[in-house]
Image (tube, rainbow, N blue to C red; front, side):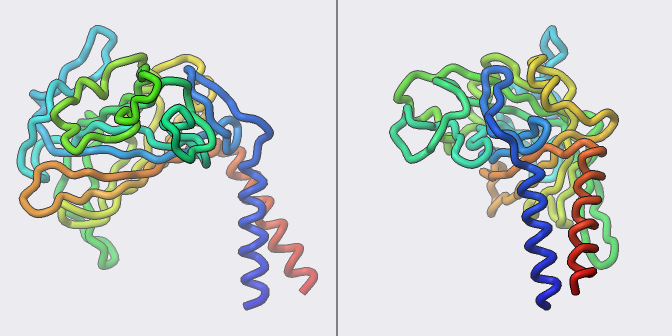
Length: 271
């Protein structure tokens, strides 16, 4: 047990060192404390529902949008939603000191990151090794993040409205920061009403500085996204939260793996 505890501690230290970087980075007007190679992690608050494809539109730049928050029965149509990027890394939030709370830093000055997503179609539940899950069809999926200006002292700009679905346009205005497509979207449940989500996303467009810094995986997903799906009772709308994190480039992953093997081998030799 002592050996196992020691190895876990060494691995945690290696991961922490791997993520460390000296100074914050800024891209597209947004600042964060990078994980590795400029990588980013954060927390999302969002509201989601299932809707008809007729409630989507595409602008002249080919960017998909929600035209309204009309919902259909849970599990039918396409899973969609709007939300707010609450935090980027530890201590950087949408609120910052301009709203008089305890956040250490803002991720941008007098602005916020909002987003919309859609095109996720629930498929027939699958059972494997005793676990039932739903693997969503992501072929028509999208997620867009926007930078929006906010007024100083506007505390409501840092909160997700209880009926965000009534104001989808307010989450899709401003400057496009980054666009994504879902590479996969799996719900660890046989019921589209509830469960935990594991998803991977890839950059498809947006601010050039953001793409240059974060789109460093060629042919491989760029972000890992985890969240929850909780439609309670007869409600057609669910308020949820999730987390996302950059996926290291393959070379960095290999380097990390070799580092952990080295730590394990060194400890074994001492034993």
